[in-house]
Length: 107
Image 1 (spheres, rainbow, N blue to C red):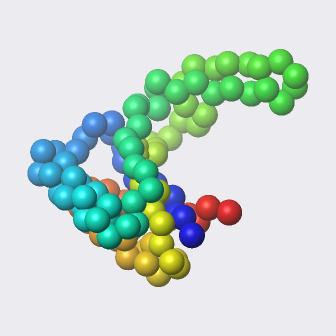
Image 2 (cartoon, rainbow, N blue to C red; image 1 turned 180 degrees about the vertical axis):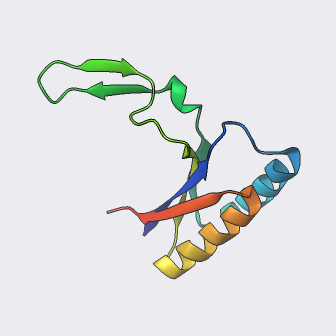
């Protein structure tokens, strides 16, 4: 089963050098243990483009879908045998990146 672990932040590129070192070490361990699928950081929400093509003609709008104080700043996708393992990995990821995270299974 795969799980999306969303990293929640209120600033882009806010990780300190120590946090980046901890994140890199965590990522290497997760890869070595076979849980790694993919991960990445995201640009500031102001760089987003929202596209609505529900009416037959695409409408492109600059900026984020919603204005909010916190947003998705990055993510991991983990492979785990069950939710308990995914939650343990997410808790460790939260500690290493020093941010709150949200865990959701893929359907």
